Length: 355
Image (tube, rainbow, N blue to C red):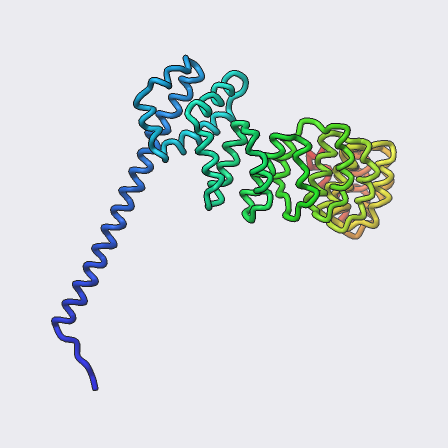
């Protein structure tokens, strides 16, 4: 049996929908006003804070203690959070006396408490921010907390903890590499490498275990560390890694061998060449280009004429150009018996600015 909707019910339904839409519009408007006020306040506060920090560095630091307006602003949690954030950013721009002044501001207004509170928040970006803040202000007593955060499930957090520990402890702070399971990103490796300024002689033996790590990114980082500090004593250990199963590791091995080059390096790379996949062969040819060893000419000519892959032929021709073999290549290009494919490869190499 069909049921008909009465006019009263229809009007009631339309009224309810209208009220819901109106409420939604009001909520959206209120939220927009709120976001505008937050953004507006942030812009005003940023100007106030940056002005105060600049004046503090340039002028007498005591004037901040009597600035009532600024002290009132500091009662607002959002203002304190922004103040701490901008202070950390300023710390990265200054050194010497200016850096000391910024540290004094941090202590003067007890912003360390704010940073510590961030470490106990649930959101990962706030925890990472707390680590950055305490690290920038050199709060060494935070180190045990940083060490505990190495096991945090969020990548952003444990990477900041790694960087913080190395920032404080230098090479010794790399202890976490012994048990690291997660991969080290290229960006994180760069940050860690920049934080290490020297390697104590008594600690250098640890590098051997990192080279043999089951975590390929740890091995790659270690190879880059060896390159940075020109650790020639690790040459043989690096050479053995040419048999590593990971291509990404082998690429770093070739680059490291080239950086640590000795009288045997060129022959060792050429000897390994036939047993390597094509991507590593390309990397070896790049190393030979940097080396510019005339003993490689015959080897390179063999790769140019006999290797089945065009990419290897092209790379070999480019290295020959760098070795001063332009005339040889021109002669080959003009030879009637030279196949058209080889002429194209040679002409390409001759035209490229590759040395």
